[in-house]
Image 1 (cartoon, one colour):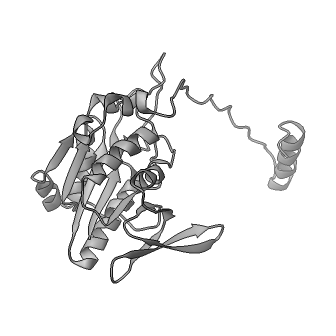
Image 2: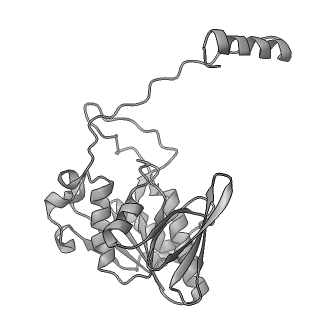
Length: 264
């Protein structure tokens, strides 16, 4: 079974994000970047499926500038076999649709039985690329999945997901796009051997033209949505401590919440 995993490089969740003055973007020079955490679940699941079946190939596909190679190498070190890097200035500013379009062209050129990706990227939180990718490829999708069971004949997958305090099982024909939710697995750490081996694994670089796309189909021009402004959230006011014995302080806190803050 050949599995394609779509990955994105995002700012570390512990990074301090600052808006670049006078722009609709953030300061990137001082930020540490990592593989999107939800995409790590997707990579790990692909590797587990391959290991369980005892055959197949795992190919990771990512879009971004030169530094995005780091994320692809991380996935290769985990055990992925190959990587495809979509790198072109024409991709800059792509929204979820333009990103999904480029990824669909890259995936369409590969032989795959299953496509996996995270349910969302932690930088923009749109949770749209995987679903749009499936639509563009004309195949089914199942989102926010916490367990995947591949049928013995490898033509179907049973996907478990949590809904309103219960568990839902959705069966889909393959190939399909499945997006990973926290709880699907615990991603492995790359071994020293894996890190060394990753340096020798191939990364196929594709630009817009090689995907059959014009500059007007991707980037800002090809996007359906545009970020017109960006600003940091307002500073939070200092908290207030209500002194006194616990019972008295609790009553006073409730009074303040009701009469002063007016939130209850």
